[in-house]
Amino acid sequence: MPHEDALARLDRQIMWNRLLAVVEEQAQTLIRTAFSNTVREAGDLSAGVFDIQGRMLAQAVTGTPGHVNAMAASVAHFLKRFPVERMREGDVYITNDPWQATGHLHDFTVVSPAFRDGRVVALFASTSHVVDVGGLGFGPDGRQVFEEGIRVPIMALFEEGRVNQSLLDIVRANVREPVQLEGDFYSLAACNEMGAKRLVAMMAEFGLDEIGTLGADIVARSEQAMLEEIRKLPFGTYENSMRIDGYDDPIDLVAKMTIGETGIDVDFDGTSRVSDRGINVPLTYSQAYATFGIRCVVGSAIPNNAGSLAPVRVTAPEGSILNAPPPCAVAARHAIGQMLPDVVLGCLHQAVDGIAPAEGTSCLWNFVLYGGHGIAGSGRAANATPFTVTLFHNGGTGARPDKDGLSATAFPSGVRNTPVEINEAIAPIVVWRKEYRTDSGGAGKWRGGLGQIMEIGNIEGAPFALSSMFDRCRHAPRGRAGGSEGTVGDVHLASGAQIPPKGRTPIPAADRLILEMPGGAGYGDPHDRDPAALAADIRDGLVSAEAAERDYGFKGPSSSKGRRPPA
Image (tube, rainbow, N blue to C red):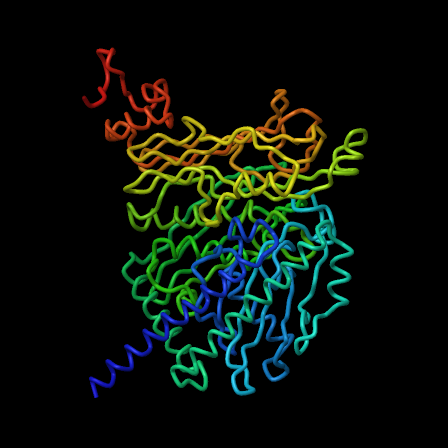
């Protein structure tokens, strides 16, 4: 009997590994076939397999926490609209409803049933960020969600293999990039289809008629493993708050974390009220990123699925900026929501010293550039090439308890910087400069990651427009354990004019846009930094000689005072 149990466990492990391979191929199919550069270049997507109850069993490694964890909750909404017994082979369902999917209109979630021998055995879901959904465009200027673009309720994209042409016609007529968006719809459907094919082949190989038993085992084991990790923490209640820029007025994010026998509860009571701009966050997105922040340091080796997510419970008062009801504008919800890992990590830092990194840039510095008629005024703009392009970039992350922060790296979203060459190929822009921002990382025993500087112009010499959603321009990332703050961001023109960090701004013809992205904060006393590491920073241009002396007390070879560099 013990021998049989060991064999059963081995079989389950092999099937679990195979399931991970299935969803990763699902995600890679989406990347290879996507039309939007935000997906194929930056990886702003999610992919996963669910049981017929709507519980996420496995997610692809490729993908963002906001998509993955929000998608984990959204499948239940699809099942309410289309119960399993009504599903037919070839059906595919779609929505971009912010409150039933991943938080704003620019993310489309697609759900497809997987059939074996005429029965639904699983559901596959995927999400991708698209470049345009019409309306005002991707940015924080909307006052209500109705202004932000076309909103598709949960409905059929395909019915028994036949495309919903009426839906495609309506969507194409309302967006700036119709071919691109239609292509993304097909890529989402294709990746789910690939996942279903691979799952059915796996079931045949292992002789499975259903995956409910395997799924229940995965969920139960993951939940138990997560609870065991939580129970290693000191029980109690820990509070942390963070002030960030907001739109016109600062926003306070306030968290109370309670760690106990049954899990971790996070309550955002006390957080600022909703904004009248498009930076509000639906609760599902707040839950996604707050949970991710905890999972980064608690049970990080445990698979992310319905079981491991269950012991972490996140609430926020309705009407707060982290639980914004319809019809609040939510297009730039990432500018606020992606700050939440830093907030909850601040709570965990109080519970366990040395577990959490310093604060970083956190929210993506992604922005949209527009060109063409009516975009940036009359005159030369009238005949300029029309374009819409989204660029994903970021500043530095906070230093870790035992390592420097990462430079020009998107945490917590995990997306990649979009390559300069790709963006220049699909739009009439030129990136004149892209380099690390010297001295932007906060000083510490472990230095904060550096931001980057980008200088961008229109290659046609025509005016264009910037839609920006930047934070950390007024309130710097904070250090931990004696580390210094990171450097705030700055947006301006080459001619010297300042640009607001949020909103749409015309860029005059022949001028250039300059973005100086924030740096992450430092960790530990700067005077404890390894002199060899600091000397390397100076040599590589990451820290100037002046900042080394000012922030670290570090003197060059000619000085008779202070710490000396190694021979």
